[in-house]
Length: 234
Image (cartoon, rainbow, N blue to C red; front, side, top):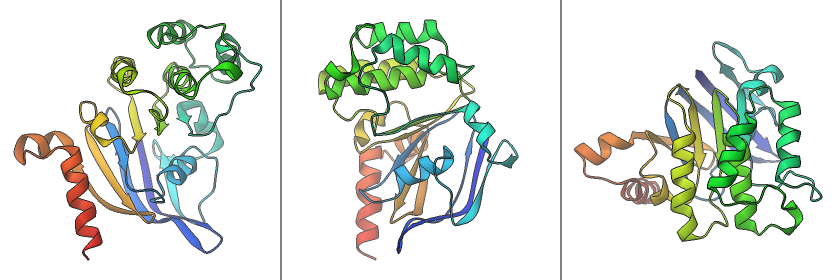
């Protein structure tokens, strides 16, 4: 899989949510999309998912310009809730099965069990943490080329977070590309191959997480502090 963003710019009124963003995401890697609030991370994901259109630049997926057909190969989990309250987990799974040929029901049921969720529980009765886990389970149950998770751990308590992260890791196949946006930088340390840092809609820099740890003895948290301190001092 190859996803190429070339000079992508997206405006909301007068503000550039994405500003001339250029980067290529390659197959079989896990990316952390990092940056302070308002950096453009969510807008970038929505643009890649085809939910919004850039004013400038192009996005290509596996060698061709991104089209609505590519939604069949891209799984996107937004921060917003997007299920009908009357549904339970089984209903949501059937809903996904109808829309996506790559949705694996058995894998979904396995992930619900790992997340300690009752398949028959109504979505309207779920806590924010339970709903977050259900959204992760239903997204990771797709056998998509590209999976994007926007702030997946919001609302999940510290004790459950480790188990959820372990479940996410186990769900990633070797040829799958995963992009995760999160403010919980330390939580991504064990899973990320490449960190992509954004600010004010633009790409600041990227680092190879393993090389940073092995050669520079620098964690993702350390890199985050260093990079944005340098940005503020410019």
